[in-house]
Length: 218
Picture (cartoon, rainbow, N blue to C red):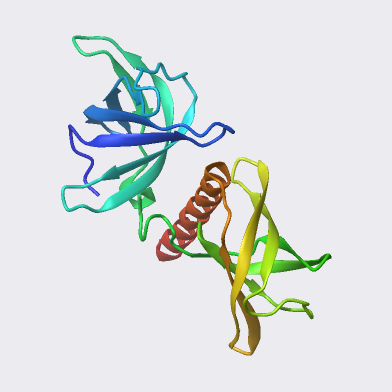
């Protein structure tokens, strides 16, 4: 997960409705901070001036072709031959490896309402990813494998924000696990903004789980 000088970073705003991506390069680094050149908006190809305090999700790839992600905040600017923006940099244990195009599943309980044939059934997830989820069937449901349904997910974030994400989906499989009935559901019509909301939720849940594991070892 080495973050070396010259590493190309992709920045995505985490606390905004806008879907944007910025590319920049690591120019220098020191303890708990990294210095980047002024980023370029991927869509407009124009240089961007990031506001102090803005928060981003950063992804990058190592020389071994492994991708990692971490959260950062704009701390300020530094003048010189190459004007730089200062970003916060968390400790290495808070860097998370991206697997399978970010569709990594995270075990977490989130509220979800499933609509099928005019009936809404409130359930709780067993796990969730940007590509689908599994719900615990702790009550009778009126859908079966192969049915197309509509989902409304409640995604609470670490800063107190809550997003309600709606998407079409299909019930892939209903099975029993440890004497609990589970339905595996795949998203079929998730737009880019909603996908980013789900990815952010999964990332924050991974980070919380990582911190719990580290605290147990201390």
